[in-house]
Structures are given as structure tokens and as C-alpha cells.
Image 1 (cartoon, rainbow, N blue to C red):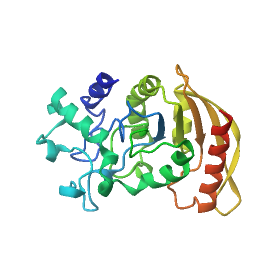
Image 2 (tube, rainbow, N blue to C red; image 1 turned 120 degrees about the vertical axis):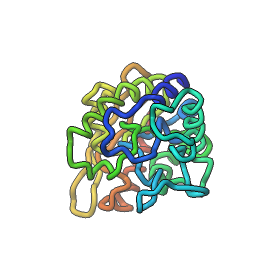
Image 3 (cartoon, rainbow, N blue to C red; image 1 turned 90 degrees about the vertical axis):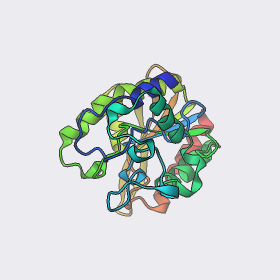
Amino acid sequence: MEDLLLQRIMKSPPIKEYITPGSTPVVAFGNPITARVATVGINPSSQEFVNRKGDLLTGEKRRLADFQSLGIKSYSEIDENIAQKILEESNSYFLRDESVYDWFRPLEKYVLEPTGTKYSDSSATHLDLVQWSTAPVWRRIREKSTQEILIKDDIRFLSEMMQKGDYEIVFLNGATVVKNLVKYGVVSLTQDGYTPLGKSGKKSALWTGSVTGSKSICLGWNLNLQQEQTTESNKQDLRSWISERIKAL
């Protein structure tokens, strides 16, 4: 799988607009080769690379390799040696607790704990539909065509990665992830009921299935654990559903 990862890292973005300046592609958070379980989101946050002013993170605050730390000025300069450095930093992302983005905490508590895996011991990894960090964040990109270009450019890579990773379970966090992985045939899913969403009585669909071309089991949900409308009760309900499905495997 390492060759696949390095080739993706050396690939330039299909469009320059909205790519976080100075950022590098993130093929995974944590080591995707040693992991037994994977979670899947949309794309890396710009906060993984820059502060609120848009300046690249430096020193102890830096989380991943960027143009500044690598001493490069363009994606065309990323050769295999530099790609290896980028991969090493993303592999060790969760080994630096002081710089880990809090976005991952709900996934650890409500999704990974029932499986007995952790990001921090490399038994779990986090993947994304799109490996590019965007500024503004994904949901604030107005041009849906831009989102589609980025997804189409990376979906084959993600599909190959999920197949070669042969993970025991792949967790799909949110409707955008579920919708696109089904749309492009990366996974096959069947609706498996609903779980409460927010306090208004709304419900979020739950999904079970498998990764196409793999023995990996998929569990997905339409709610997003990190959204403000997702309550503590919603998270606990999702955790209970995950625990029940794992016991049934």
C-alpha cells in the first residue's frame, strides 16, 4: 500500500482554488497500513495547517508537513523523498497528543471505544473522501462543482486504499460520506433503521454493508458527530447501536 500512498502524495491538486495555501495532501491520519479499523470523513480541516489568520502553524503547534517545514514552494517539488517525509508525519499524527485536533475526540469515544481500537496505538486510522485541506472549510465552499471535482479526483484512490487496507470495520461519519461512497460504488449499504438527531425529534438513517472488493464491514450514519446539533444523547445512542452491531459480527 505504501507505493499507492506515495503516488497520491506526489499528485498535484486538480484545481488551485480553495486548497489551503502551503498545505500538503493527507492520505490518512495515523498509519493506514497497521490499522485494523478506519473512520471516514469528508476532508482535512484547514485548522490542521493554519491558524485563524491563515498563517501556517509552526513549532509545537504544527501538526503535519507543510511547504514551510519541507522547504518547498510548489506541489511540483514533491518528489518521492519529500512524499516519504509527508507520509511519515501523517502516520505519526496521533503520537503527538499535544497537537491532535479535537475534532477526532468524538470518534474516539463513541465509535472506536466499542471496537477496542485507538488512533493513538495505530490500531485505527482516519481516512477522507478528499485528501486536500480546503479554505474555507468544505461546507462553506459555495460552488458545488468544485466539491465534485475534488471528490472525483480522489475517489478512486480512496477506494483502492480501503480495499488494500482490508480493515475489519470501516465507519462512515455523516451523510456526505455515505452518499458519495455509495454513488461511486466504493461501498454497498442497506439502511438499518434510524437514530435520533438533535432535540427536535428528527432522525438520522443508519447503514450497514461492506466495502466493494473487500471483506471489510461498513457501518455508517447520516448525522455528523462533530456538528453542534448532535447532542450527547444522540452520540450515546449511536455508540449503543455500534456496540450492538459489533457483537453481532
